[in-house]
Image (cartoon, rainbow, N blue to C red):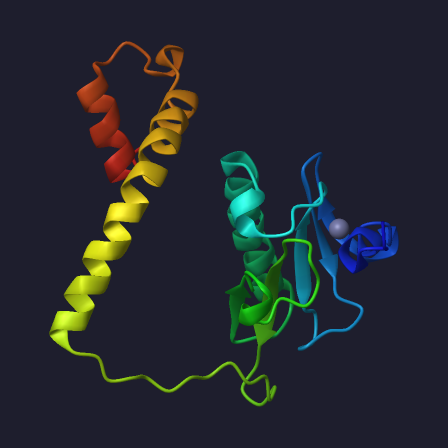
Length: 172
Ligand SMILES: [Zn+2]
């Protein structure tokens, strides 16, 4: 098998700023902006659709934590968090990655786009087409996640409705 650039990047321990068993966040050695971070699953998945929900979830959580850490440790104005999913989307390494680009006023990173005109008919047709496809995809993982994240022994005596309301209101 030909060497994967991201699998090789995972071996550069001096560039790793966070890792656990599943993912690593690594400073890019070919950065688009200063302190450009690439977050990789340690297992080689080519595109997002191949990664199990657990990994997708972890990538999102780590991207948020890295983004926060960059924001707090460097003098930046914001971050862009991005996944290029597929060659047509600009993915140049066939190993799923999340990019975190720290942004400053004049960093010259170009990620802008022009908006397109679209008719209401076309929009509602697209919404219908996509929602039919997303329903079977979304149903099973969401149920699994709820069961995993809210085990009965953490509902500490209150009924489930109260627990869910507390979660919604973010009370301790
Ligand atoms: Zn790889």
